[in-house]
Image (cartoon, rainbow, N blue to C red; front, side):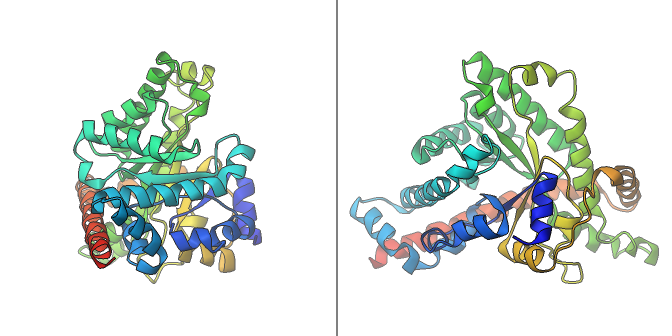
Length: 365
């Protein structure tokens, strides 16, 4: 482990890998990342699985097994991805136990085709939870309007949840409310709420990618704000986390042993090559935070990253000023609304590509 990754971990930043494949598991690579690069969890999404299953060799035996059972493409995806996640959960189990359930987590997402269907999201979340059958699983549910009540219901069933595709502070506040309602309901349903964990995945780089283009339409002075929106937005999200989880409405739940829903910084690989590779890691470091990184970003942090301590809480006032200044030039609500819709659509496209890939593999067996 490099000094930077060690210092981030010691600060309270949980480094998670944003990638998973069968070969990464079976080759020992995932265990190596845990041992050598401080990786404490894994997140997946439809795009990641689409890329992984495009390599037919890695999944030849798994596809053959699905074909022999007469499974169609979607049923095969359910079987294969659940098995990947189950194996990853087993690898992370010692870390899960050592951290009392905080880390050692592996996420799997409900089908993005259900992003606007509350009831079917709830049903599939429960199916995935039972299918994987591991306590260190997180079920990913998108923070759409229809996803919010699903989040509450799934938590109320005692299931740990990773809320994904959050772009705005307003939506994040709704996610926190859905989480607290879910924990309250879980307690009423007789579940041990100390066993339920959740993260709220706040997407970062896509905000800069959208806002920077709009700032270019303004004066040269506006250009000074390029590369500022994503970090300011994420820092303000962390500020909301700090406020909400010491609030009067949280205290009764904390007294029951409930765990705060940690903020997770997602999409932390830079999209603008002019920005430092580790920008959304080093500038978003604070206690009780998760940063899920693509391998390229993890490697850059490992090889060239620097550590400056907590870079969020000392900069909250500045983040508010920058966000306000950008908001005078750009309709930020429109940007974040578009990003949510676009995020769902991109995951739907990846899911369709995944189905087509598996259909071809099943036909070729």
